[in-house]
Amino acid sequence: MMRKRLIVNQVFLAVTLCLVSACGDGGSPKSESTQVDVSETKEIAQDNIVFENISIDLESNPWKWPSDTNSWPARDYPPIHIFGENYQGKVESTLTFDMLKIGQSVISPVDGVVIDNKPQPEDCDTELYIMDSKSQQVFSIDHVISTLKKNDQVKVGQIIATVPAWQCKEDFGRYELMLVKEENGIMEAYCPLDFINPTSKPNILLSISKVTTEWNKVATTDRSKYTSEQMSGNLCLTPTASAYG
View 1 (cartoon, one colour):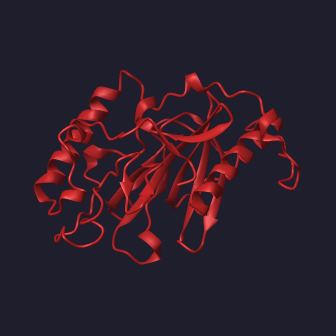
View 2 (tube, rainbow, N blue to C red; view 1 turned 180 degrees about the horizontal axis):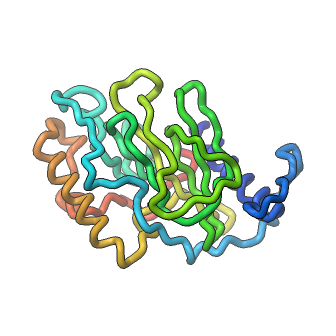
View 3 (tube, helix red, strand yellow; view 1 turned 90 degrees about the vertical axis):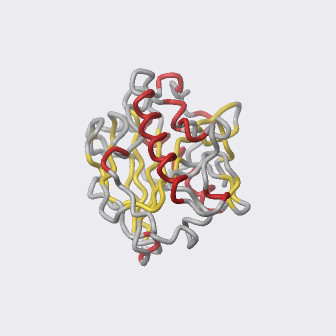
């Protein structure tokens, strides 16, 4: 819960700093010690958020599923976690990809600019923040490795990161795509699948459906299997979840 609260605070501080410093135009952002009133940040054009992909190519077979799916994490989690699902007392507030091949590429779902690339040495990875150039909304891709720096420009489909060993030691990787928006003064996490370009969404849902179908053939516990509705590609149990985890 504390980590999610930190993510939310980082995201909205980054948005504020970027907006007041004309992010991406070569100007120098204000120091992070500057006192920022997030409530006075200019309104984000939330309706313009459109993801062109879900940050991973599912057709490339990115998975490293264990041969024994009765072992952790396969016994507890499916390869794509269900947004809004309660997993062992924690509600999923990200689109999380699990049991991935180490070194798997992560691609940008939007055209935008890097707000920050925060090292997380305790997990041997980083958290990458990117602002969508259309909506000025910031999303995070967590638990990846990236050489991108603040103010770097990115394009849709560009490789922006790779997946390292989970928590420094596992033989698989896991990363999270998170979108946070403010509604009526409350910060909520939103399922990224609800913001996919309508022309791209059918193919993306079909790719997800292939994954869920293949997973259900090998999953050995009911709690990690997908329901029939989820097997059609609908991995959002709810449209929003608490951004605080």
